[in-house]
Image 1: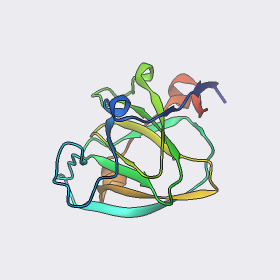
Image 2 (image 1 turned 90 degrees about the horizontal axis):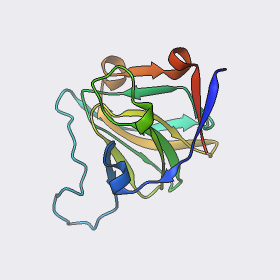
Image 3 (image 1 turned 135 degrees about the vertical axis):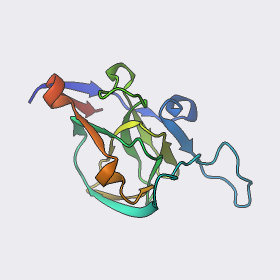
Length: 160
């Protein structure tokens, strides 16, 4: 089972999320493109935008993943809040635990993860939830690097 470390979720803000990516908030139609819009890099392949249906998996995890070839956008459908654990992008094969954070994200906003941002989730309390996901068509085949804390540190996490 390993050691269980509890991570306290914080409400996401643009400033707090900046080391990991961007928080994207609703904007008025007709607004011009600026730095508040998702700054995407999907240049290494064919973009894939889809609705991802996830079953409830609880709030515990021991694996964290990153994609180094593209940015990724995630957001919930239906207005429900959700959680995402993140560590900043790095060249290291192991994420920096001292910089791991968990954010509670409300259903009227989405996040853009920087290339290489380590992430675990989405996690949520509903029986299932739908998320839109923007990444590359082959992200989960050729650009999916996972670290298992249970194997390396006998450690797992619980979002509280």
